[in-house]
Image 1 (cartoon, rainbow, N blue to C red):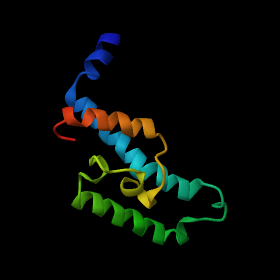
Image 2: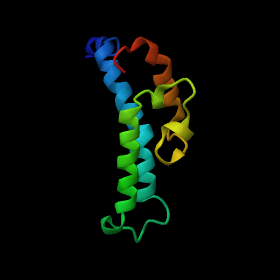
Image 3: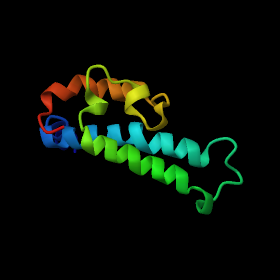
Length: 106
């Protein structure tokens, strides 16, 4: 089992997939969940979340149009995360940034 894990952590496609999942979590999932489940959301329901979902769609389209946005050397949570909120795990984004030059399909 340990050999399989070691092999996976040296496999470029696996590392790329893990990096993408990390970036998705930091740029979209965590900021979204802060707005849905954070303080002051006790009365929030799906019926009045249309504007938030439109913002998510617009942000995702922006990433589709400019895929390098979260990975550019000048990117930060202000430009790379939904609503410009701080990374939930900044060290995870830093780790992806360090790996990015070795992941050609990221």
